[in-house]
Length: 117
Length: 117
Image: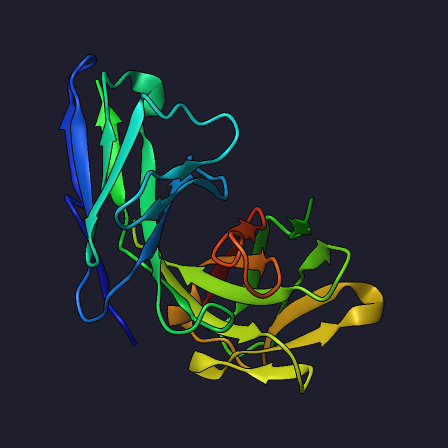
């Protein structure tokens, strides 16, 4: 199947700093990517939809100024956690869709674990 | 809004035993249904999906799931569990075809599977 890669897989940062996470579709073009967040022992929650060449669409309750999303090319979306705080520590997973809108499968990256000290 | 419920947070089975993981959804129309598996610290891998047609769906790794409209259920089954099946399993629902919601998945809370030798 298609491959979606995230980098870094793990990152530790100090409170107040910003962290960028990359999501790449390695063997297909993805006009749309999705960013999810997973707290320990909880399910995945959709944060935002990343659209190539346009602004991201954020889910209710997600701060767009804190979680900056850029989708500059058909194979790369980035999530920047600005001024990170310990409560932002989480597992962030991206996914990208292939194929036709109605039946295209979503492929998930390996996830990026953020720990804010 | 649609919702997904996985009633069992944690299931333990012996290797070689059969397995059934429950999933119930709440949605006005027939949704697109998925089962994903997540190993510790990893992203999600698609096991199988149901869009339409035959209500018994075969997936990878010997898994199958049956869509039962009358019960709003999409339970995952495997006749003989292997130790390597130990992981967390997520049922997910996607809104119907097209539109801005085509890629949005709503996940259940997840079921952790432990396999005893």
